[in-house]
Amino acid sequence: DDLYVCHHLLLDACRRAGDERITQVQAAIERLGLSSNTVSAKYVVEGKELQQVNGTESSMLEDSVERLYQRVCKKTAYRPMREAVPFGFVQTSSEENQVKSLKYHAEKKALA
Image 1 (cartoon, rainbow, N blue to C red):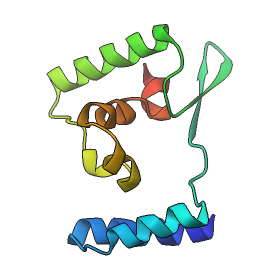
Image 2 (cartoon, rainbow, N blue to C red):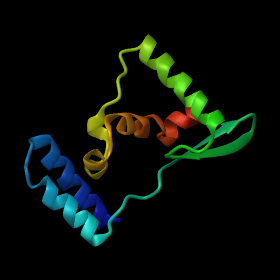
Image 3 (cartoon, helix red, strand yellow):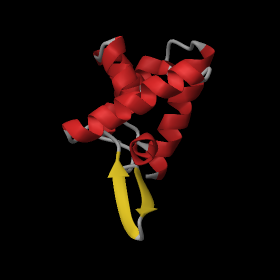
Image 4 (cartoon, rainbow, N blue to C red):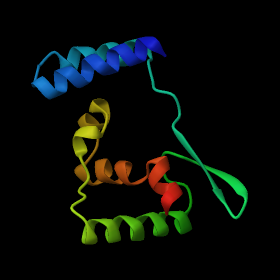
């Protein structure tokens, strides 16, 4: 965990500074098999504790998340920040998939 956090901080610093060594840091993360902990959001609805994790699951939840996303974008200045997407994912995915990844964070799913 600590090793991933250190590498992630270095990766983020390289990304913000435009430092080309970012690819070396990403390669080290992959070579060492480092990954973050699973992110979850716990919440209570009608006295029942529920939990969401990052990622897509069901079409019903996907519809709710999409409606929430569209409403927030329409009524606020919110726009997805693709800089928040992990560098390795940016290198291998489309812009559409990066935005989708941001939409399905556990906290947003809990709000939907």
